[in-house]
Image (cartoon, rainbow, N blue to C red; front, side):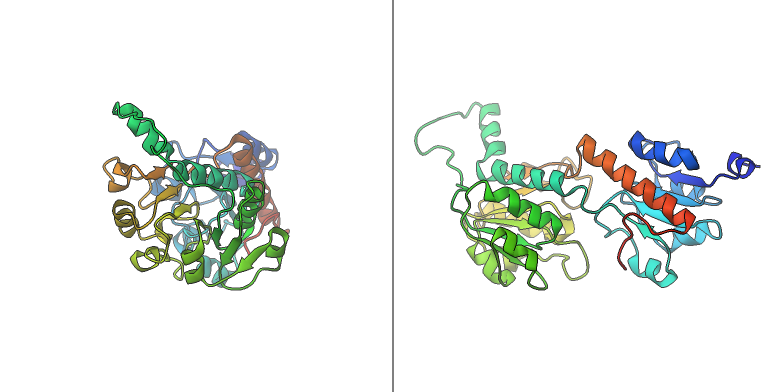
Length: 327
């Protein structure tokens, strides 16, 4: 007989033992918590531990689908991811089964927006290329050397003015930018708070000096930025992606950066992840690439673990989650 069965306490699987302790402590007050032994665990490691658990805190972007629910039946009562993006989740299957599913939106908005601004500056001002010049003893200097793009007075385009896109826009008001325009499925009333104007995606790409990709990944946004749409952009434009790698056709982006179709790109996400060290993307001086660090601050990850823990506990208890995914 397991410890959980002996104590009568629910058993919760946390799929990564490096999950912040704040969330784990909340779970341990009411549950017995188990982890995969390996760090990082494989999906197979995780699936082996699911039978008999009451809840799962799903940490990582492994496929979360009907197979997980089947293995967890009949004891599994609730799952919460520790993420805002849900492209790795079979949402239709969860909806069909009406299964309690939580996630952690909003809490990471500030951290992701901060990184987006960092990528914007690094790409526009050629930080990576400048460091390469130093490394290769090519520091020349002079009034026309290594000129970058200005932010003040620039036109900002945000593809997808959700909570993260809106937070980016708020940050940029302090930079005295010019116009802020956005595209998406519909006009957003909250755009008025930052003076943003709703336009078509083609107009946004043609007019923007900086383009931020902030939409979720789904069938309608996969390869949204491709060879055709990249050609609409200004040759002086900077593209920033803090959403998901597959929203951009990466091969087309590499060509656009090589050929001067656009000025530069700042990428927190790419395809695949992890990106191989020999990727063509990493050979480009005008691509600033970081390894999916958008929410990677101590406080943000701790807050995400706390919300996910409360989601799991509520789901097990049959009460409303703190942050249920809206099917």
